[in-house]
Image (cartoon, rainbow, N blue to C red; front, side, top):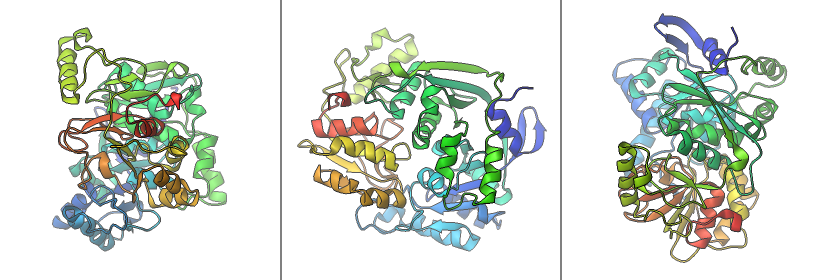
Length: 465
């Protein structure tokens, strides 16, 4: 039978068919961070269990560490125990650990692809819902819960139910000022935040094929915001060029053999999907969220929606609650809304290409009075490369705060928060109530749109700049 990419990736890792749609899968890579990773290693130690394959696990602190200049693992005191625990337990288990300031440290979903830990065709897990980011390289990558995390460490396997297959084709070329973040926010707003539940999503089409790997990772990152824990793009020559020469990628003859295998990882031309969506990428404008769900997204030239126009009672109630929380007026333009904070970072948009896009708008401009603007690189490697290109100087001259690598204000687990009632444009992935701090009001957007807001002091169409 013709196979989808999901079929091929799944079949590669089945250890045993458990029946009723369930399989025992082999885990090729395991990422650990200072929240779930530390907890998982503690749980394993308490039960007297060993890590089955420590050479297949990689650990780094990202969630609960400060991103302030000159930070150490103890700068944010509540996170110090997690940082120290991850470091100590990883060492005892023989797991490779990347320390603060060391090449390799960073947000797990940024450092894993850039080091070649994430490869086409591998199965990769982490106790983090945005593990789907790694699918941008054609990996079967997904987040897992605490009990699954412990099981994977102890056995290098997981019991999983195979999801259904969805394909989303983005056709056409991106317009001026439009970035991968705009595409995925547009998709979520169009089909809904629960539309991917029970599916693995394959992203395809002309716009995806033309997109660099880092853009593909941004698309895959928000798969979980569609309700799907798995999202991926079939590997191609763009992927192979990205992987070639990275620290943990195959070398020499082994790389050539790997590419032969990787080239087989695409859907058969006559493969059937459980759901197939087509989106015209050339019709998408720069996009921003207005409410408290990623599906509350509109084009920059559209007004805040009126709850009375919602298609059903449930959404009417949700829209009204979101508008009340965000202090918006239905029917008013989203453009021109004053902002207090701007955050450029997170596993969605903190890679070197994201910072280049942001710096291109920031160069020669300055952050508006009253706006606090942060740029947080996604990894130590991104930070050093950005500094080598002078991007840090561009941001500093423009009035941005240039920070150390970490998750920072995306989830506010390290004390870095948007103040209550303040409005923030963020390049992260979630605008939930309180996500960036109690009472914080978050609008999701691309790096370019975030800078446009920072220098204008209000949500602004980047195309005007």
